[in-house]
Length: 116
Image (cartoon, rainbow, N blue to C red; front, top):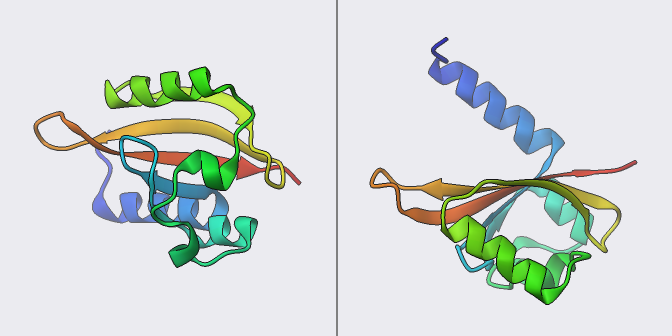
């Protein structure tokens, strides 16, 4: 099945409206976030862009586990697991590397949900 451009736009729009979406450098520094993330952290984008994800989201993992996460992502490995942030029950489900046309990982997208 080949998706059409409008289907990709609809998917991106649905994700952006209903999930927490954050883009990071390959070292975990926040590049951009969507409005649901800003609502969750209670800050504007200028206050969190440029900070490491652990500073803003405070995940419930050891420093060693965090280093392993970013190491895997830098290698192009998709990380699909659930762990809870210390901020308003945000549950991260997926970290996915974003590679350029040469296959080099340039950034990471994180898609998370917020439990009611």
